[in-house]
Image 1 (cartoon, helix red, strand yellow):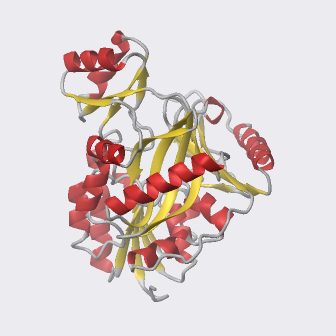
Image 2: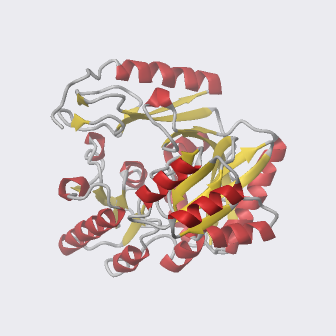
Image 3: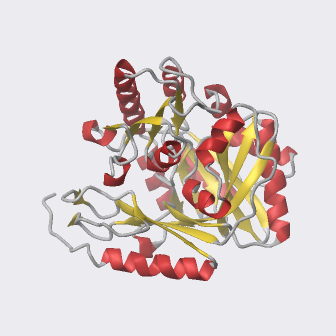
Length: 399
């Protein structure tokens, strides 16, 4: 266990959920967040915002360096006992090494993270365990991309080998779209051509201590929903737990626990799947806190940050609480340009600062609802989303 007065540094593209849970443990919480949403300040003891310094907003490497710079700045003022890392750094292995110089990271090593993020390697290991994955080929040229697409069969997914949240992932229905998408992505990252699997997007959350893993929940993922202002493969929320057959649950449970144990991962970890005709196909492993954190807490009663810390110390829960009810998370993206109004509504989080210029397609806020039934939670979330969108008055902004 961690002492109440311990000082933790939290880093994440959206660090607020981790901050909320960490603060409930009585910890002193320092945070480097990207967005600086208004509701993070009431729980954090000190907040530094990466976006305020970001001169290259579309450069992943630049994001990571900004977070590191701000983390070092906080370390100059505070004695930090340990670090918790959220999303945005899965493939920034050098940053993990530099963070370790500030304080111990409560979680996975950079070496284990590197192994778990090597998709081709993971797919091969998964195959040995009887876990299927989409046909995937890493390409270095547009000619190779076209050849891979023809070999796999159109349509295909064209995606960067690094990154998360669905950013940069596109569906190519023909060769022209393969070529155009490759040209866009090849400027910054290696590119993967991947079989497009139609099915149910799912994820699971696990706790592990380096040798043993336990499934906490299996979740439905919401991807690219137009009613939430999202498109393509952009992550825009969850429904927890996934509504599926016992057979599907057992397949995902066995596959996920085996993979996490094989990789010797620690703490809270997630795995993404597509469920096609009752068969789970592995997409990727997320070796850190997941976007489902609060929804999982709602249905299980666990404090995931506390469980993560205990798992890193070798302690796993004797029993995972059975899910009670359903939790729905909706990330609302702007459907048009507007200036952010003030919003103070229950069950709404990650609220952008009033007066901020919001461009179409950018995240605005998050809805999180818990109800006794799936339909009830979905209905409440839909009504609340409609209420919030009605407050966003379309504005002509200077480009």
